[in-house]
Image 1 (cartoon, helix red, strand yellow):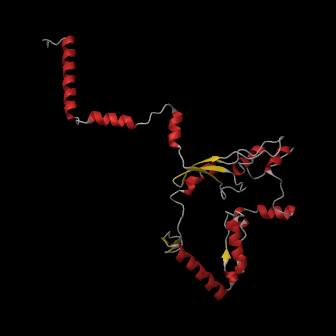
Image 2 (image 1 turned 90 degrees about the vertical axis):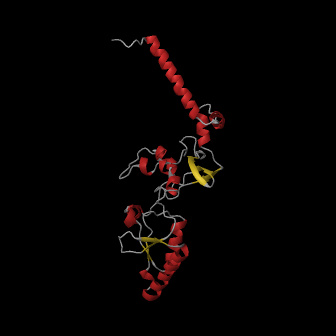
Image 3 (image 1 turned 120 degrees about the vertical axis):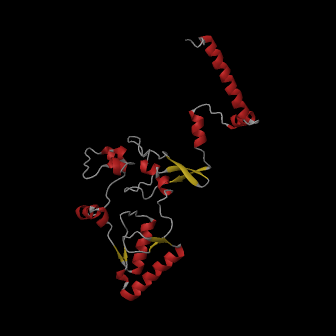
Length: 254
């Protein structure tokens, strides 16, 4: 028993079915579908290559200069171009315009590292504290309450006055912490501690004995020349550190 359907008849039937389906789908479309398609095509940017896509993505209102002060131990203060849009930093690039110090040594360009390149991400990270928090539970409970700056400063000042008048200024202790910047923040903290005649903890207990060891051995802490002078050294002994990780802006002189 045969169905009577040959190859030619099958193709004709399939074509007729496809035409009927397309006609049915056309009836389901809104009347202005062709107009919507034309409008959508008119709004699409006509990119001619990857460079146009890149330019459209990285647009900015202005370019400023910045650095990353507390980002590394050498505090290299590398110069960066900061690209801003609507008051927000969107991109950072090494400036790379340091003048050459000597014609017979490599220059300081480029200065910067991957930690600096992602610094703006740290600045806008949701975990960054932007408001004072007051502990409302036992220590270690992780219970904190957000308070205003006026309340925070008032309570701190009140505690300082009560402690100094009731127990003495030597009961007030300032901990500079491991992030010792030797900048404005540290100077303000130390000045206040001196004015109050209070106690400041030695940060070397938290960052190591390097400063104390150098002072005891050589009589001072810092006694090197600029980093480009490494280029003239016949022997460089590195012990207990890796400048490729800890001195990234200066490592190319080694």
